[in-house]
Structures are given as C-alpha cells and as structure tokens.
Image (cartoon, rainbow, N blue to C red; front, side, top):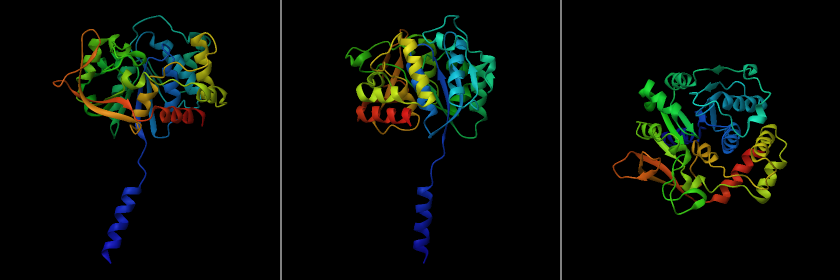
Length: 307
C-alpha cells in the first residue's frame, strides 16, 4: 500500500516545472550590434524573469535610450532600466535609431544610479540572481567595491575572453574586447566569490546567421525582431545578407541552458593587458569551449527570434 504512494510523491516532485530564472542584464548595447540581438533573445526567452537592464561603459545614457525604446516596442516597460557609470559622451552606430527618443518618456522606472539599483536588486532578491554581462564590466567591478556581498547572492554569466581560439575561429588567441577594454575591472570580477560561467570567443565567436536562417529573421513581422533588423541595417549602413557575429546571444543561452555546448571547468586568469589565460591556480570558471551542435543553436536562435 505504501510503495505506490511513495512513488507517486516522488514522480510529482520530479515533474513539477521549475520557476523562471531571475536575471539582470548588464550591457554595452549601442556599440557592436550583437547586444541588440541578445536583448531581443532575452525578452523572448520564457525561462528568464528579467528584473532589470543596466547599461555599462561609455555613454550609458545613449545606451539606455536604445534599451528603453526596445522595451517599449516589446511592451515590457515593467522592466526597470539602470543607467551605469558614465565614462564617455560619445554615441555609437545606433544613434540614428534613437535620435528622436526622449528617455524621460519611458513609462517604466529608470534609475540614474544603475550600479546602486543593481546592488539593491541582488541583495533584496529572495533567490539568487543570474547576472548576465555582455560587455566590459566597470559597473560590476564598482558594484563589488560598494557591496562585496553581491557575489554570494548572484551567479555571473558573461561573454568574455579568448581561451584557445581568437576572433573568427583563429588559432591565435585574442585580447577580447569585453576584457581588454577594462582589464583591471575584469580581474576584480573574475576573482569574486560567485559562480561564473563564460562563453569566450572559442564558442560565441562562431555564431553567424546566413542563408535561409537569416532570411527567416529578416522576414519576421514581430515588432521586436523587426526592430533588431532596423538597428542592424542602421549600424551596418546597408542591408547585409547575413548577420554579424552574434557573440552575446550565447551568454543569454547559458543563463538557462548549456545543452548544445561542451563545458570545461578551467582556472582562468585575466592578465593586465586583457588576455584570459588558463592557470591551474586561478579561480575555476565554467567555460563553454566547443559546440556540440552549432547549427542546432542557430536554429534555436532563429526560432526564438521569430516566434
């Protein structure tokens, strides 16, 4: 009599759906176009509960305008925006897309001190936050200085580094931009106490949509996906026949799955000149080092963007 009851309880416990993963996105959107693709992918990922988007590096107000306009198009103005450390007045290749956008018109919450808002969101969360970082990390370094305890309440997932492969699949490793732009800040982040997962160029540097896959995205009438292609054409100053390298989308994927990737636990040390080198004495990081099936990931990305 008791055995079937026990089995029933066990099956019920195993089959209960997992809750959404609470995430914060820290992004340098408005530079390379891949951040815009990544933002759209995140908004279309039902596995994720987006708590905030924070802009990082350079002109963070310009970057916040892109985020705000995208969130309005997506009808996701429930998502707060944090304006990160202002390090430059320069704008980037998507400036024309937001030249007439008034940030003060955003219906949702905007935090002028995005770093403080990021800290508060992590510290006040009842469950650990996954912090997805797809750009250089001055905000995150500054947040760790202000409140080191965030590392015990968050998991870091980032698009950072070049371990065994460089840009375009080269056998020569690179000082990857997100690390090399502010290596001291990256050193602080890469030695913090949190669990870390990264996609280096070894994997994220290979993602390009071509042919029918790219055509399907371009023909999609979903407003968010249309906005991505609008931005891409402005950024590229034309109408490309394939995507650029979509580095940052892989970090979004890793926030909820690593099924299509070969993961290795490696000691990774950030050098003063922005390289990420294997070092057995360094902090152990979960590194996406190879694709199990890159074509399947591209199909997955297209499906997400066009649904």
